[in-house]
Image 1 (tube, rainbow, N blue to C red):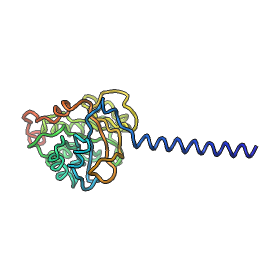
Image 2 (image 1 turned 180 degrees about the horizontal axis):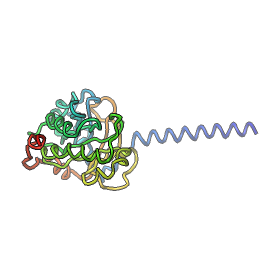
Image 3 (image 1 turned 90 degrees about the vertical axis):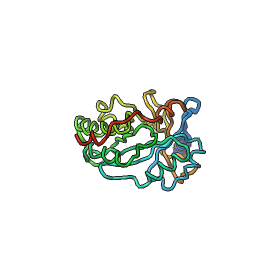
Amino acid sequence: MKHRIALWGAASLILAGLVLAGGYVYFHTFSPDRGKYPVRGIDVSHHQRQIDWRRVAADDVAFAIIKATEGGDHIDDAFAANLREARAAGLAVGAYHFFTFCRPGADQARNFISVVPRDQPLLPPVVDIEFGGNCPQRPTPEQLSAELSAFLGPVEAAFGKTAILYVTDEAAQAYAGQLAGRPRWLRSLALWPGHDDWIYWQYHNRGRVDGISGDVDLNVLQGEQEKLAELFAPAPEPISPETLLSR
């Protein structure tokens, strides 16, 4: 009897090890069907340190969303170099802002607009809304709606494009009613999305790309090169953000 129990225990351990190993391999090799989603991109910040953007562009990467700002006064110190060098390497480039819950939306809009240049084509601005890494304050849905509107109004007017919202599951559940009506950047790691209502899909947060030392977020576009060109096309003449922010 003891011998049988020992055998079952050993078999269970082996099975658990195989499941864990299989999950690890699956997660680290998971990639969407490139026939269906042929346009791949990355999102980066100073955490990726020095990036060789020409090598990145040569490794099947077509676009890059680059962190520009956070809150009302923080500027990512790698943003300017990343934007300049990624553009020079031929990538379609865009900027994102990490939205904090403890600063007024108008202050955050001023920060983003003052940092991101508007004299060359850009992908639509992205707003990152999540609880992880945010201040402990949790606004009510009504408070978030007001502050997010105070951010999006000037930013969308300044860049002439509708912003894309990157929202993690926890924040999406808390503020679903306040996030409707704008295109979404979906985060779904190692699982296929349950719907097609998104612009970007982040499918990996520990991917590898030539030209970057260490992990990087991997994404695909909903559409082909024509859709990327449409998103990256110069915007119509924008409204002066100074006018909106001074109201």
